[in-house]
Amino acid sequence: MTRKPLIISVMYLRRYGKKVDGEEYGYWSLVESVRTARGPRQRVVATIGKLPDFDKEERVGWEEIGRILTGKPQPQDSLFEKTEEPPSWAIVNINRVSVERLRSFGDIYLALLLWRQLGFAEFCKAQMPDGREAIPWSVMACILTVARFCAPSSELQIAESWYDKTALDDLLGVPTDRVNDDRLYRALDALLPHKDALCRHLQDRYGELFGETFDFLFYDITSTYFEGNALGNPQAKRGYSRDSRPDCPQVCIGLVTSREGLPLAFEVFDGNRTDVTTTEEMVLIMESKYGKANRIWVMDRGMISEKNIEFMQERGARYLVGTPKSMLRKFEQELLKKDWEAVHPGVEVKICASPEGKDETFVLCRSEGRKDKETAILNRFVARLQTGLNKLKEQAEQGRLRDRQKADRRIGRLLERNSRAASLFDVIVTEIGAGKDRRLAVDIKKDEERYQWALQSGGSYILRTNWKEADPKVIWKRYIQLTEVEDAFRTEKHDLGMRPIYHQKQDRTQAHILVCFLSLAMWRTLQQWMKASGLGTAPRKLIEEMREVKSLDVLLPAKDKTIRLRVVSTPSKELKVLLQRMKIFLPNRSKII
Image (tube, rainbow, N blue to C red; front, top):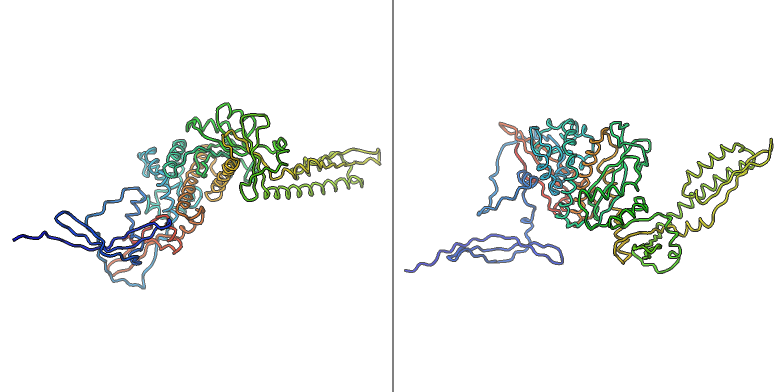
């Protein structure tokens, strides 16, 4: 008797996905798995379509969240389908159910994901190996940066009132009593020596994550001020303050970014350093630390002088820079011609040859919106200055102004307060008469030709480059990306709390700025992450939404004991959509404590 081969048939549901017009659709099919003598075979029995009950988010527990944060590989699926754990039953007195230990979770978890995504965890662990300290310095550096990203504050406030209100003790395993201000200060000291290596690491990581080539380097400078005299910091000096705090000592910070605004490197300069004097030093620093590559430096007109241009030409460096307003005079005839190209609504450009015949390209730009704004500002200053000078002249004619020195001081103050219009007026004070009839005469002359030129050139500016690019539109679009550096400074100061600085020593100040720099890298990475997920480029809104996600303990009084369940609050429907788009998983299973 001939036996037929044994055939075992198993049916199960399988989810399939496909893309239609760039959007992903999911559907389910009933699949039959047959084990034959020739091996397992599968065939689709029926296509079912969408199953709402099966399309819910994946069940994620606290153990899985720990695996995500540590970067450990996902365990291989077993041969058999995992079954749900059997339910645990208990009789609970619902009248005595309570909630304890409310902690910030969402924004903290997001910051830790970014910390790991940028490779900071692996870098710090390798560069700051564990020693005899109770908490590794790599973990303390993480706490400093996450705190700066989520809730900017001082090290003292982190230790006394912030850390124990977050879920970091669950996510990092560092008890609250081990985090104090002294340990945080020493973590700053341990982190600072690795500044340059961190910047090099970031460049490599950006290349892996975003494919950055760093062919353009955008450089700008800002300042930040101190609370206190900062006598222990020789770099803390009074200078031109971008924060409108000339009464405070400050330091200047030069920042280099990619064209996407990703921070690459920074240097700290004396507070009284003028922008134009930092350019040569910054170019040399970047070349010595990160190599001399085929890069193009992009800077605004405040960073450039003829000396700097000559320096970069001698080194064979390429540049795309703004020029002083005075250079517009050399292109007066070009301004009157009509061969302009529209590059943006209200913005026109044209390419011009070098006036000196050098191997450079000049791009003349004009903006209608900028012209209207500059004209309105100029006319306001002109009217204010003219009113003040006419009043002074009237007082002199009436004999109420007889002191020459007093008249000169008043004129000087008027010109200083209305500096935009000061060059348009010539004011001459003379003494006439003698004895009791002696009085002052004030002669006011407005230079109409200069005024008309100011109106004509308003909204116009010139770009200068030795980059071999013939399209003025491309040159303008690349230069305008300098706004990304300005936005990075605003993020550091407003969102990441870089100012004011409370540290009074130079090393601690530089370490504080380094932590702000790392937080900025995380912020910009989040921005790119959101952009790639089709969620815009506003990290601030997402972080605010994530702050609403909390972790908490639910206490269930049972017959013989109190059951403590650690859970994470359910995000809103809108936030759920964002998290799904970004593939961010929150624990949705409770943890018995």
